[in-house]
Length: 117
Image (tube, rainbow, N blue to C red; front, top):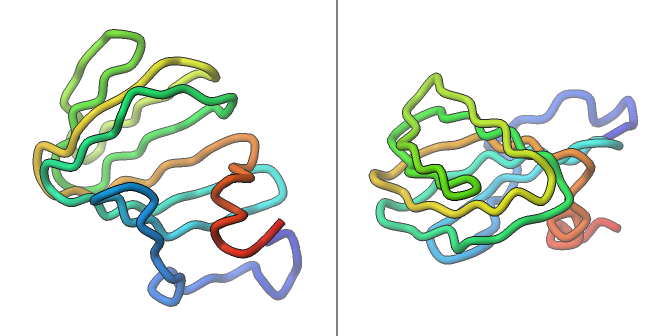
């Protein structure tokens, strides 16, 4: 993004990428952030990991159990979780769900998957 011709994006036209088994994400990148609209299959596992990025998890549909620094909670629509940089986190999809993740700074690894540098 960052250019005037990319201000408005039809999400349905963004090709989803399966980042890990059961996690299908439509990725958008600004100069400073990465947004990922996830469609996650029921039972899919998010292995424990951490990263430099701050992450804001926005639950849109379904239920997802998220463990952040050892604290577990099942998230439902309307709940937001703010994960600090380097916080260990993991989880699993209790049901099929949709989540919007916002990362700061840009996820360069995800940007590369889109063929951007």
